[in-house]
Amino acid sequence: MPRELSDDHVVAICEVLIDHGVEFVIIGGVAARLHDTGHATVDIDICPSSREANLSKLAAALRELGARLRVEGDPGGVPFDPHPDALRQVTMMTLITDHGPLDLCFAPAGFPEGYDILSEHASSIVVNAVELPVASLDDVVTSKRAVGRPKDIVALPPLEAHLRRE
Image 1 (cartoon, helix red, strand yellow):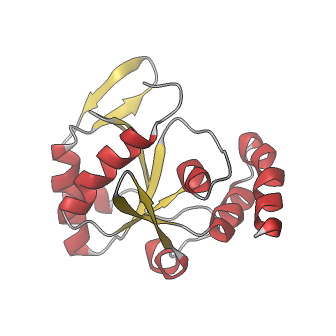
Image 2 (cartoon, one colour):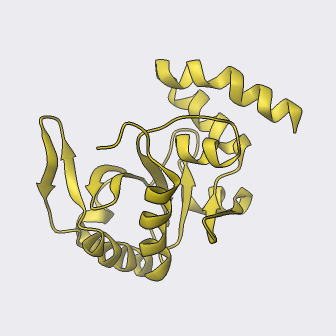
């Protein structure tokens, strides 16, 4: 697993999702970084739509990405069948793919309605000539504040300062 997820890894993962027609929004640290905040992160967090048709597209994309369950002590991950029925049963899933770590979060902290509300505020940010759907920085801050983990609390002051400058 890379120490910090590069834009190339982010784009490689997102291109597969986009090619499959998956509705999703990038959230978390990668979203913060794509808003030019300098935030470092080691995985990409996405909030996919939980609509039935989208779960089927997401399952196909995860198969193409070679997604495996990320577990401590097994850097290669544990194989699983990314079937829509399995995806429907979870709110969060941590994965390793052929292009790097990917976390699925259907109901991010502060946004229990998930994709539907986040997509309303999202913007498109072009990275390596690929248009990526990215949560608003306001929404990233709201989620980090709601989750309240120490690493998120530490990240808040620079993110909030960036928002004030905008």
